Length: 350
Length: 257
Image (tube, each protein chain N blue to C red):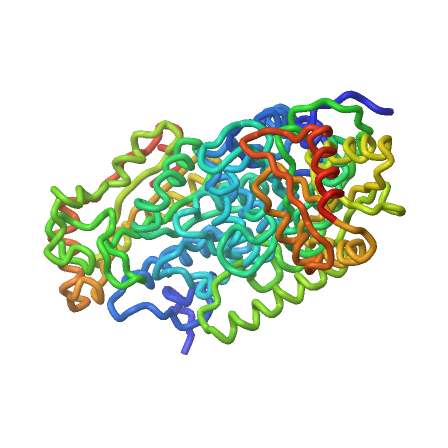
């Protein structure tokens, strides 16, 4: 049965139903309701909730709980995510499973609290120091956010890696009809790495320091092999009216909703336009986008930033067709009519 | 030869591995490690203890302890320990942190862990200098003390004053047991061990945050012989950092000895 849920409450509810055992966070708009919701729910369920002194502390609490084998997450928004990058790098370097959500707001600096997609680079290209990419999943609706969060813990545990849910203030603040998944009971079992006390087994160490350059090189080779596995298995995208399309719009998250409306408007005008929407931003659907670029005449990239995913589109398209960019910053959300105008300009240019 | 009049009075702790410690000659980390290991053995908690190692000279302490260990980012050990303890409340969780780690980069984490009354134990090793990075000025470096980043001696006009962390933390309602000890001679080593045992006992009784500050020597970076370094602890550090019990909450008075 569908119910009307606000994004920032549906997301933590989905996490609880996925077996969330612990949450550590720090208030920041526009995702405070996530922390507030879990402050009501988790202690009542006998699970862990701490409002930390900073995002720096929050991510390190998450790191600790993950080392102890718990299903754990945090959530924040852009400036808070910047502060978490230290911890995320350590988590990547010590291979413990963690889920975090970035409800993006306008930047740089303090920016504002309006929806933005300005953290694409930071989220998908690593963010913290060293060679790693979190798995990054970008929902375009509250229902999709629920589905992605619900599956994120299994994904994090499968690869012993970070899964980042990348949404923006729109997804967090709006209410939509949602079908919530059933609550799961996660069976506790020893997976051979978590710290639970060295009872009847050798002591375990979770660390990310390898002083010998050859050893650290080898460890990075191992981490990179894991990234190649992720790239092979976890690419996700959605396509809308692309079968006969002469022009493709590429957009993710909230921007893709405006783009989808623009596609409908364009079709009414007889323009053969479709939408390609990456859902996994890392791993990025390069191969599918490359195929698409072989059968359309031009591509329009729409983002709520200055052109960040644009760079990945260029990598995939490799100059086969012209690429036009339409970006709104500062918390402005593109209107379908504006996107449609850009499609017309795109048509004129080829 | 064993006979009925002989008994083992001194042995290698089960909670230490047989790995060779890599500390400098005369460094007191080894002593403090051993005290912790003896306490863990005596309390019978080796199989349910989880340690959190710091960034600093003791970064590899997890190799020396026969207990589960996580390696924290610099200063973040109390946050990491919080995460572990909150999801495994029946385990014994302790951090081991130096002065740069605890009193500079990790000041927020330690103060808030104490303020929350987090049920963890912290061993705070204060040697008034950054050891691993080569002897720079620490938040606890004494006024006038020469370091590689205060080459003319710490000038309090320019570089401020050292922080007395035990006194700071003792102000917090969430802190249950905050004491300062030293390992510069055998008598004080014994007192330090007793305090470490008290701190773990506080945790075992779910009685809140416990911390033992241990004044320690760094002969290498102080440029002193091991013996002269111990004298320095006694004559220079203790006057600035007086030994004593800074907080023993009423609720734990029956727990500590």
